[in-house]
Image (cartoon, rainbow, N blue to C red):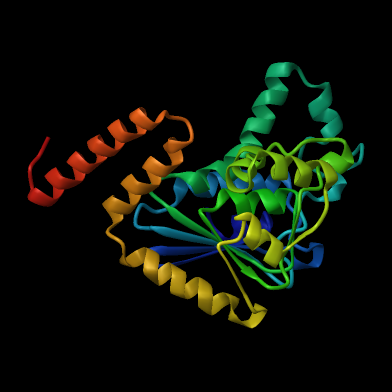
Amino acid sequence: MTPEELADAGLLLAVDGGVATLTLNRPERRNAQTPAMWTALARLGRELSGDVRVVVVRGEGPSFSAGLDLQMFTPEGIPGAPSFVDIARASDDEADATIAAFQEAFTWLLRPDLLTVAAVRGHAVGAGFQLALAADFRVCADDATFTMAEVTRGIVPDLGGTGLLAALAGYSRALEVCVTGRRIGAEEAYAMGIANVVVPRDSLDATVADLVSALLAAPRDAAVETKALLLGARLRSLEEQRSYERAAQLRRLRDLAGIGE
């Protein structure tokens, strides 16, 4: 995508070697998200250079993301995008395809060939919370707050956040967070397993940089295999997981020994 196309969608992208920094750039709206932003994010995931190993997602200004732009809740919606009323009136197949396209903006961050970091300061609400959850790591400033606000508006978190939150925090706590829509501060997020680390706000960028350096130091193929193993572990039995580990290890040993399959 061109810088102009990204800017029109409220995004900035900077690539430095193996690191891509993706910035939500609507600070005047606390980086509220729109369908145009999701379309651009999904396309960016498809077009990202294969040289990129680490993706950092951040928000411009004091907030990570205040979630969905509330104009989506109005009958007229956002110009050029389907409103919730439009989606509700669509056929089952059309509505499913629309929501699936929205989800693609988040799911590519889970690709095994990428290690992804959310640098969270200020508000991470709804879609903002789910975007942070889609990353492999959440480095949080001490002023970060997470809120899953969808249920309080009569809808559900549908951008991949339910499974990811349940995996991190456990079913009961995830259900409580989603149904009550209460705010979770940075320290509680850390205690729940949502935040990897909490640092003073003015240390956030340096802490993210240190983590990125450590991620880049890991051999890429080994990191890819390891992320794939961990992602699949939730869906497999213990014996199935051991089998996948054996196969992954054999691939790594043969690669290191220069033995082709």
